[in-house]
Image (tube, rainbow over all chains, first blue to last red; front, side):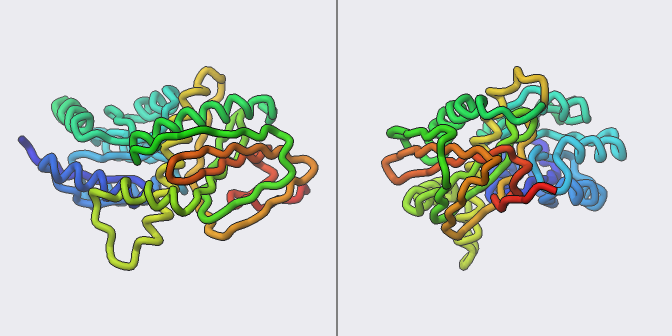
Length: 122
Length: 175
């Protein structure tokens, strides 16, 4: 299995820790984290990750806007929304902004692995 | 769309249902019952630790989850069971646990309102750690719900219209 460099964007310390454990358990490497949409763009420039996991609800700039900014600058960016947001419209907004898929919280390892496989295979 | 208090019972029902689901999934805790106090509440009592988030659009409510410490301790133990908590950082992670649970519950609730034309924005939860009693200003609507589990109670308070208060439930005088 290919190990990918992953950037986690989430304002929840617990989610960051859990996602880190899940991703490392799947053989990937977390190269950076960002707690706001605004810092996510800078973190993407700095770390050039293969994949981003992106929360939707965050202070300062939400995940939909952060996704649009990253994809605007890096069209090849692969971003997966990891969110508790149940609204279909919000998820569609994120996909319109350039996200490649989404996983609902609480995140199950098999769902995350499946989504990463799909997104990275494209 | 203006705030309309008739939406509160529907929001309560959604939150009760998702609270039941999330507590079961995240903390293997069963909700044993709930009592609701709709729109006739004159004061809100916040206790122990409270996580507050806002639902926007036509809902326009601040929603405060006040956790009894015994309940939050059980949720914390389950939620953080598979991660390492740095020494001395338990209070921080306790607050994070409350915020995470509330964010998950309210995030899932937004799905119940997606037939409404507008998007329901959800603000990131903020935490209050002091017990407080908030009296209802004349132009505000308060409602509350007590959700009972085997390990303690979470009191959910509904405060609207949202723009009358800041994110910490301080009343903001008009004008």
